[in-house]
Image (cartoon, rainbow, N blue to C red; front, top):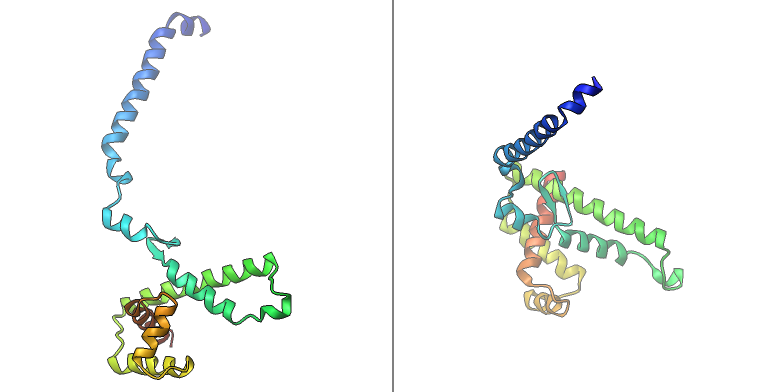
Length: 168
């Protein structure tokens, strides 16, 4: 057997090389669409924090969840600093909240839930009361100080209302 392999080693080598090259070329032809992504999909997921299947988790949603969680902590009791374990737990909780909001929002969209103008106005009125603001102009000034565009803020309110409506 070894004598046969030694005698025909150049033929066996060429068979292996030919087989390898042919599998490379057939892979290029048959699987070329597998490695291409559409531009819209790429653009949609380019700033995503994470993906749930093909659904991107918005980093702005994560940031707002993290800010809401951190605002509830009294840092003066901890000496002005949080331990790394607690910080990591806060980041995890904010991430999980962002994931939950993303999934619930997608469910609300699948059921074609809508927010009425009245519901939106009531939510904005509640924000006026919570932030001790008088009117829309004061809210816009408040948002301008925090470098948040008003339209983006209203979209975030609509998003939250849809999530709340779907969760009920």
